[in-house]
Image (cartoon, rainbow, N blue to C red; front, side, top):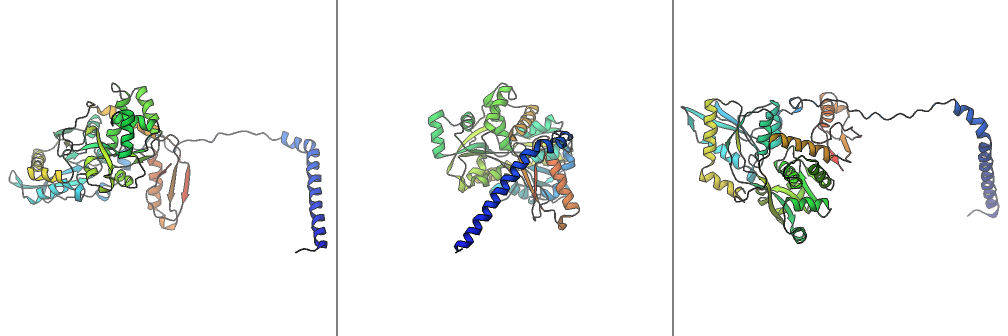
Length: 431
């Protein structure tokens, strides 16, 4: 404890400090006009607007940025003969376990030693999200002999972009997209709106009564289906009218989650933080963790249509027809039902067919609307171990990615934060 003498010294020092501060402040105030004005008068101040200019003006061609298909999407089933066809299939059919119905059919087909014109034939099956499969096909980067997306919306799109795509089989195995709601939320919305349908969901989200997630319409068939269905509810006669655009914008402003694919949406939904989300019925019945949500079908059917791509030779056409015939056997349709397909076979969409150009314009509308108020943060390693090609790939993917499904058109990259973590492609953390 300081004694009385020390206290007096401290008080004197504090008093002196206060007096010095006052004298300095008064001195600056008195001398400022005459001392600083001549200096300030000689300085010209110009305000410069920060140039928010994109690195590239023209988006790169899709075939310049698509990853190597063999590395990213290796075949689920490899061909076993020199006479064969290659098929792109959506991942709910060409995966594994209950998502592997078509995988099992293809393996059995190859093991059946089927002959056409005296030669044994086989198939190569490559599982790939419907949207990415369409990108490879329309860019010409990689052309399969056949393509079976989840629904016919993708077929209309690739046709509009100039690809010859002949519908060989409208339905491989029945499936539908659906809106999933917790029982309490479903009861609440039924009491207010009378029924559960796409319009009910759109209105509830716009009114901030429903926390809902959906999937990216550039990659996910369910997401694309939902986008088209949503626009239809705003204006059934013109999906691209000002009324439809304004309505969708008000809806989109209240969406907390947009997953890349249906399977990612399934995993995100397991957390239970959402009142509702969209998913295919086949995925729903095979995911016990989300069976507490109740399923209501919407939009176009997801029956896995099969398209012949390009000008097939007579031999390839016969192999494709034989494979389609093979999977229609009762044995394989029973297997499809076991794996969750062929549910809601009586369901029919209230909306009619949509042309490929309208679907593409709807995607562009979504891309412009979804990014309002979003800032992306990129986290990547720039240490010595990333020198050379890995870092060049990262830079390229960041610059080119701004034009596609993650960033809005011509949006600037706002922030970079680097930590030590080997990431060859960007991570996107969205609001």
